[in-house]
Image 1 (spheres, rainbow, N blue to C red):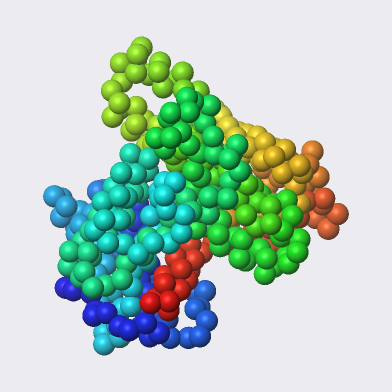
Image 2 (tube, helix red, strand yellow; image 1 turned 30 degrees about the vertical axis):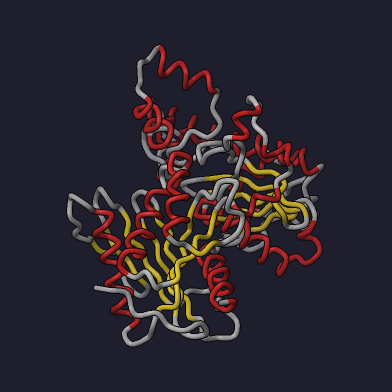
Length: 406
């Protein structure tokens, strides 16, 4: 089934696609109101692609989804297209916005996609193998089937183009910098939303020394001054920085050399280990999900020992990197938690804030347990907040701006 036909700018809907290696999230935004609503008109998700797929959309519960075994990702895209067309009915689609993880040093703003841009973006697949190829597959399908439909790439790296030169550099030969080896930073759509909502909530105070903690299956921190990125934990790739659900985070490069030279792992095996078998899952040997791990950490056996070690290391890495970014900022005024774990795990927030007492962080435990918007004590030197992220709205807003400028 084809997408609904293209509608002139000013009316219709924008579809936002967020494609990962095993999931596709989608959201529809109505462009008719004068101000684009923050909440999507309708949204959903296909999860477990390549394993046990399921589908959920607004107003329904998650249900198993039958996908083919040959091209399950393509089949998931086709299922979403059919559901979107059914939901829209006679209403029309203006454009599709794509979250594209890597734009390299070339793409620092949302960009109209054509065949040339698509070919260019394929060069960045090795830098973001969990996300880039899947977003580009969705783009390619739509380019071939509906070439007249506006598609816009919204880059997770773009927000970090304000990083000072010293923060972008890697201590490698300069010739490699010229070939693109530098620190890019990621989760930019999430941090861009934080820059919008924090100014609304805190006014001038948000322009001070801010650290946003995007803690989900992927995780990073962003240091902001004047609501602009001045430091971040992810660098050249989405493997860097914090320990994550299945990704290792910052790692001594000598360990990679050891894995290849002594353990005789191939390049593909090392990549799979670092992206899919490390982090909370690898250290605990049990799960990548903190709530699951919390339920096991009281066990007095080898499993309990590994679970406790995994959670301790996870928190330690967050605390250490917050300390490093606070040093870059010259102090800390505001700490905000966002994304799945950041928004919903009171226990992780409690353990992180406990270890940040040296910075003047004081946590209100009752507010923290409620996932309240403000969770710091009145006399805390650092304000601590919880703020849901909204990457889809940021992508839709950029795409609407391009539509209206056409």
